[in-house]
Amino acid sequence: MGFYFLMGIVALGALLLIYMLYLAFENNLKEQELLFSDFPETFGSLKVFFISDIHKRIVSDTLVSSVKGKADLVIIGGDIREKRVPLGNVEANILKLKSIAPVFFVWGNNDYEGEYRALDHLLLSHGVKILDNTATSFESAAGDRVVILGVDDLGLSKDRLDLALFDAGEGGFRILVSHNPEIIQKIETEHKISLVLSGHTHGGQIRFAGIGPYKKGRIEKAGNVTLLTSNGYGTTMLPLRLGAKSECHLLTIRNG
Image (cartoon, rainbow, N blue to C red; front, side, top):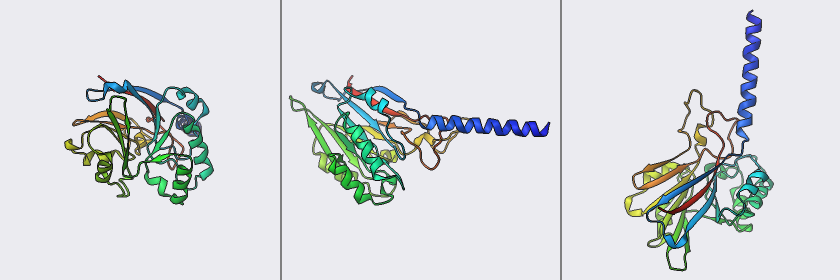
């Protein structure tokens, strides 16, 4: 009886591992509408494909096809790779994401593993706009502005929100991209940032009975700021997930 019980436990454990491996490689696209009273109506809407924490994964062709023609721009929220991920894999992912729309990128902690200067060169050679404590803006025919600010990795103390704000200039609807959601602690009301896009936490990646090292990915309000923290697309350390599904986001941002 003890032998069969033990074998049953082993079989259940093996099935759980297979299921967790399956979850790690899902392609879950969350289509979400975000309404802001201060978003300039002259833009109509802004559609953003946001993907974070790719790590070791190769972006699915099916996922890319499902987003093509629907996004105005692509934002990578850091950790496009980690240690021992070949730059060839990164290049393959960049080429796929570029086929959707112009690509913007912020650094994550794992991006600095290995030769980060080579990664920097690769991104720039493919026309990726790196937001490293800088900002970029778009202007409607009526002169209204949407500003996207990006900070370098907070966990490595490379973030300089002050520099990104200076680069942003005055006014405009402001979206801040930070790999680490803890940047929310540094945002003041006078910064007039409406939306923060982040990842890093993987939603805890492996959660038992709803408990994990981090909160699950979510959209929440932090004062006047809307904070999106993504579960991320890939995994770190172990290619396993449980209770925190892989995800990326197709965001429609408009006035409302």
